[in-house]
Image 1: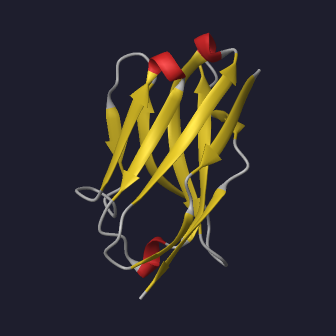
Image 2: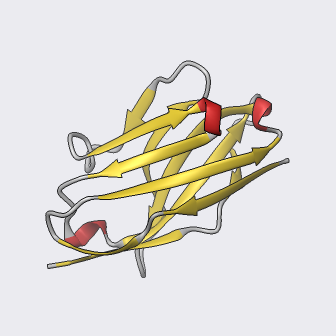
Amino acid sequence: QVQLVESGGGLVQAGDSLRLSCAASGATFSIYTIAWFCQAPGKEQEFVAAINWSGGSTYYADSVKGRFTISRDNAKNTVNLQMNSLKPEDTAVYYCAAQGRGAGRYNYWGQGTQVTVSS
């Protein structure tokens, strides 16, 4: 089992920055990829960014390319999402998710952290 705890959300103004963190614990050796998803009120969950746990390859949604950066600190079992140039449409609950090796899906989820961007 893997446990994920997000932190770093908050209320900011458009153009500001926020850094989200996802701390993983438990069977972290079994993690293949960690990703961030977001869900705004009344909308479906969307993929934001992902990082390969061992190799460090990164993937981004088109809407955040050039503004968000995902990184990992394996020593601390943490994945960070640096969000710059935030827009009101980035307002959502952001979830950290982990895909176990061979799982084929994101099978571990955090509780989410709220990000609100005011105009």
